[in-house]
Length: 261
Image 1 (cartoon, rainbow, N blue to C red):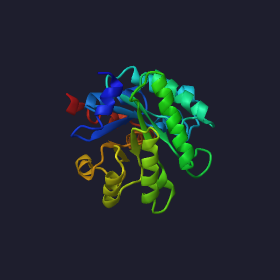
Image 2 (image 1 turned 90 degrees about the vertical axis):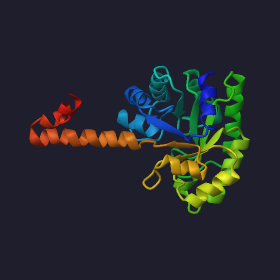
Image 3 (image 1 turned 180 degrees about the horizontal axis):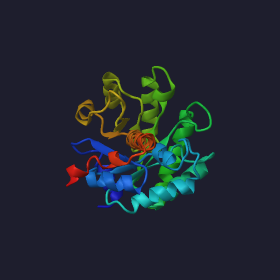
Image 4 (image 1 turned 120 degrees about the vertical axis):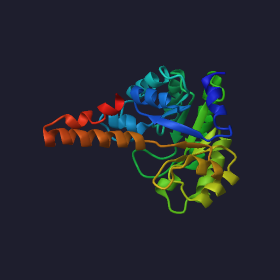
């Protein structure tokens, strides 16, 4: 079984797919070693690691090289976060998706929000893009490549449930494998979504939305923590770096050495 099919199957097992979000090879290898069955890259984490803010500010080839390094060195399937596709037109975005598939990932996240302005793509326009992506993937031998269509309705709109369901249904009809709705948190709305949309739902970890078992009971099929872990690592680094300067002493770097022995 190839990784694309393996990754697809992970969305239909009894267990919820708990995705480990990585931003470089070390974080990916660490997550794999810890037991995560699949890795998803975090564009926010990758951008931070290179000194940028999120939002397609990195050259796409540079972003792709990091994803490639992860995909070629872990044994588990990898899904690539390519934001809105790093392109101003559909042809460029489709080409970028194919370039991403060519480096060995099993799927992508692609979102419907604009990068240079507030707002969401029109449904029909985004559906056309998804359809073109799916057609291109199949024509290049990437059958069942996982397209996780992210909609940012909950990040940009008030009372967005009905529009979210409408967009999700349209995206699935246009070739999406699953739907990612960051910001969707209310239990009744999660249930409403899973009843109405016949595709795996991915939600994002947020304060108050953290437990895999509870989410599985609500019908969620995939759970990811985005940039939360990379942010925590950065905060830990900043704290320890500040202590080094403040104390002019390195002793706190070795506080756990006795426990290791």
